[in-house]
Length: 65
Image (cartoon, rainbow, N blue to C red):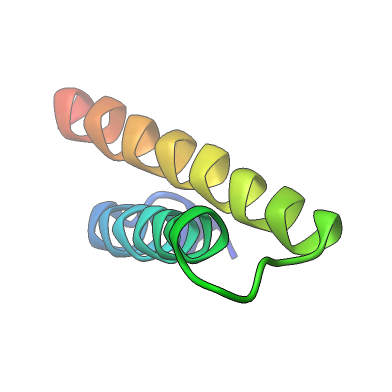
């Protein structure tokens, strides 16, 4: 588990994937005909937040090496 935590590419791909998923869900909620439930919007916001955190970890690990 420690190997995945310190893997730079894992943090990069996870961050980009979660930000993309969250932004797509928020776009779908605000611009598409079927609106999402509050729980799904909260998951999308959480995904964007965790994606930003993963990208932050990627930049910090990149500076250490």
